[in-house]
Amino acid sequence: SICGMFGFQKYFMYLVRRPLMGVLGLFIIIWLLVLSIDLIEAMREVSKVENAGMTEAILMTFFRTPQLMLTLSPFIFLFGTLWAFGQMAKTSEIAVMRSAGLSVWRIVAAPVALAIGIGFLITMGLDPLATKMASQAQNIKNEMRGKEANMLTPFRDGIWLRQNNGQTASTIHAQSYDQDNKTLSKVVVWQRSVEGVFIERWDADIADVTPDVFYLRNARRTTLHGENQGTIERQEIPVQINLEALREDVAQPTSLSVWSLPEFTRIMSSAGISTVKYEIRYQDLWSMPVKLTAMVLIGCAFSLSMSPRSGGTAGLMGIGIAAGFTLFVVSELSSAVADAQIVPVALAAWAPGILAILFATTLLLYREDG
Image (cartoon, rainbow, N blue to C red; front, side, top):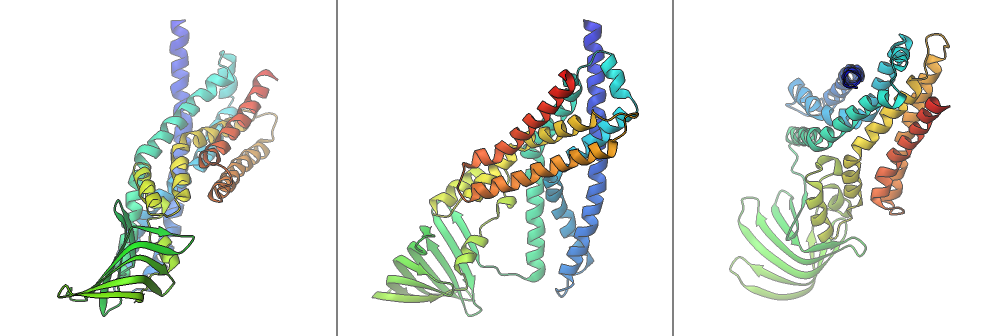
C-alpha cells in the first residue's frame, strides 16, 4: 500500500505539472496578444493628448493588462486543460495510467486541486495586486489629460463632492443621497475662490438634484465674517455634477479588491447608493475557485474521451470550448438577473459554476461507469 501511495503521489505531481504547463504557456501567449492589442489602444489614446507619448502608452498597458488576464483566467484554464490532457490522451499516457489502476477521479483530482489553489490565490492575492495596478493606470490617464474630475467620495460621515468651475471652488457635503427622489439630505456647501479664500457657506436640510443645479430648500447662508444672512426658501447652486456623475464618479466595482469591497459596500449603502454591482463583484471573486474547477472538469470530461485511433479530436475540443463559453454566457446572464434584483446575488454568482461542475461530473461518471 505504501508503494501504491508513493506511485499515486508521483502520478499526482505529474498530472499537476502537465496542465500547469499548458495553462502557463497559454497565459503567456494570450498575455502577449492582449499586450499588443492594448498597446495599440493606449497609443490611440495618447495621440489625442499633448505632451503624452510612448512612455505613457507603455505604462498604461503594463498596469491595465493584469486585471484583464485574471478576467480571462477561466478560459485559460479551460484551454490549457483541454490541450494538456488532449496531448496525454493522444500519446496514450491516459490509457497507461488507467491500466496502472488509476480511476478517472484520481486523474482529475490533480488538475482540480490546482484549480482550487490558484483560484484562491487569484481571489486573495493576485486580484488585489491587479486592482492596484489598474487604479495606477487610471491615475496615469487622468494626469495625462490634466483631468480635474468632479469627485464623489463616500465616507463614514456621508458623501463629499468637489468641483472647480475656474472661478470658484465648491466643496459639498451631504449625509445621504436618495436616488428615487433625487435629493440630498443635510447639505453643506462651502464656496471658495480658486486661490482658496473662503467666500460663503450654505446649509440646508434638503437639496433637490438636477443635472446642472442643486436647489437648496430653506437654505441658510454664512459669509466670510460669520454673518448669518437668514433663510432663503430656494437657493440655486450651479454644479457640473449631474445625477449620472454621482454614480459614475464612485469607484467602479472592478477597481476594488475582495478585501476593500465589504467596507466600501457598507459605506455606499449608508449613503443611499445601490450596492448590487459591488455585491456581485464580491461574490464573483470568492466563486473564482468554483469557476476554475468547473472549467477544468469540463476540459477533462472532453479531453479524456480523445483517442489517437478513434479520431474526432477536433470535434471533442470544439464541444469542450463551446461548453466553456456557454458557462461564461450563463454567468453573465446570471449577473444581469442579480443586478435587476430578480434573484439573490449569492445564488447568481455561485449557481453557474456549481451547475457546470455537476454537468462535467455527470459526463465523467458516464465515462467511468458507462
